[in-house]
Image (cartoon, rainbow, N blue to C red; front, side, top):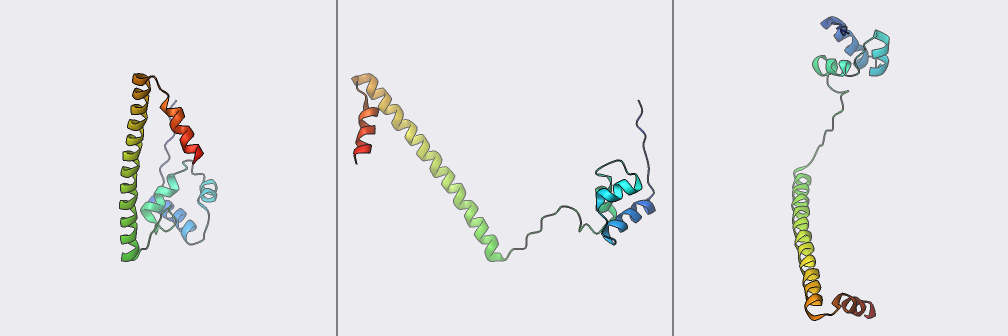
Length: 120
């Protein structure tokens, strides 16, 4: 089954964009009012013909100090992740050493180590 393709003139597109930007009409209401089927069609027209102020954008205004602080914090997070990974590996190695020692010497160091931590 062939899909119906509807072509809109540039003047029609501009009038829809104007209704949204100037009159404050909501995109979905405009879509229904003019019988526009595509949900992203009007947003594309806004990008092409509009002032771009109604599109979903995040604008960040930062001072140099804020930008530097953000950069410093990101670097700190990176270093903390590396340190955590190193500690996790060291912990796994310690656990494996205890496991091997238990097997070699027929002991249960996990239980005795665990008990000594709880006594303190």
